[in-house]
Image 1: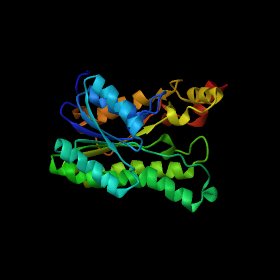
Image 2: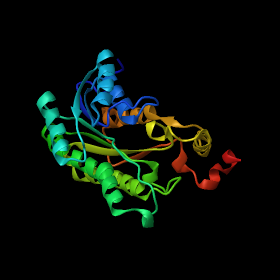
Image 3: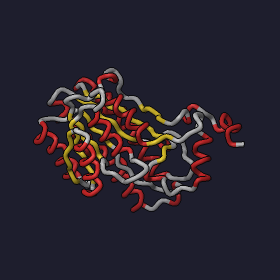
Image 4: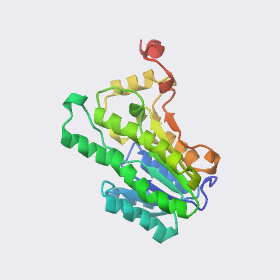
Length: 266
């Protein structure tokens, strides 16, 4: 076990199932939270994937249980928070992590595709927060962590308007919660991952992976564990006075203009 920075905390990790190698952010965060003393409720829409994460946490001596849910359903979002209350008496940490890709420029996007991406990427997080906040408030406060993307801060490598716009919304959701619920002792922050190597990009070519590495000032890709370590900090009392922040975890990419990395590409 780790240094137990989350000892006796109850954490709800959405999208916690294992997708195999490379590790995903929900899986890595759930494992790291458990290693640091949290009791983790693992939410996923795939029981088999969630059971992999649960089994590994239990084998390591941690505490975890499953909740199978479709977080686009308001009933399921209500129920997963209610499960935290029934099983553990409260909720200290909400890690909002599900997302789906959405390609295209504004003029290319169909209304149906737009509605679907908004439901998965943004509406689900709003609903999770809607039900988590009253329980956190009733039990003394908590920490909400939303996963956005650098594509929610800047236009990305490819046109992906539905994804980018929803990820921008995820970031601002954390800000408004931080302002509206600070006096409830609820902190809300957002992590914007950069070019990490995770399940959603394992199909990309080696050439594109090298480009992603070279354009980053540190000259490397990140991984899910980099995001999980940032989430651990934001969830812990080490970040007790940090709220309303959007934290890029990106190897320095958001600090650079395109021409600043020119020499790395030639």
